Picture 1 (cartoon, rainbow, N blue to C red):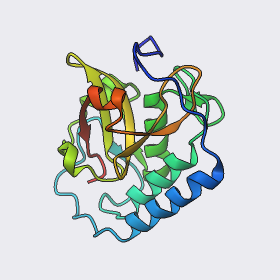
Picture 2 (spheres, rainbow, N blue to C red):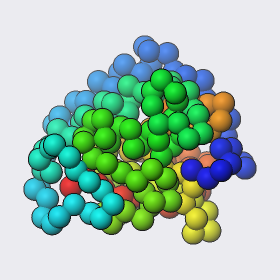
Picture 3 (cartoon, one colour):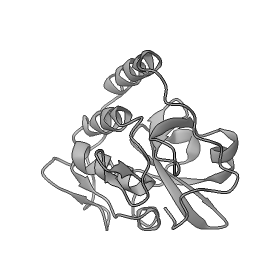
Length: 185
């Protein structure tokens, strides 16, 4: 997240979906994640700048935990520099909070540092739930979110908004997609 919390040309925040609209998506995501094949065990030491604490690195339930925690925070207010549900979140604060709380993975605090994490970089057509998705322009990364599957990601987009789900192929996000990091290997 840069000092400016609003991105030029960024779409206005969508209204927070009603619980009835979110519940089917949560159930579908949970079913899809629980039926996915088990991840292979980690092969090397944890990537530099990512620290795993108190959990086996090959625990297949961590991606599910990350997704459920992130989706549970939809509707939390945006706050620049925020990193708690009570105080609100900026994009990197949301990602850091979710990964530490749900998967015991400590990530760097800023979007720029997260983008530098040495981790697998899956191609866009091979994203897995729990991957970090990065957005930028002209080589500068300015935003991060958590991929949840079916072309959607959870993020804290901008001042005046809330944590929400958006589509990777949406007009704004599709143009600014800059890659991904897989830290749950």
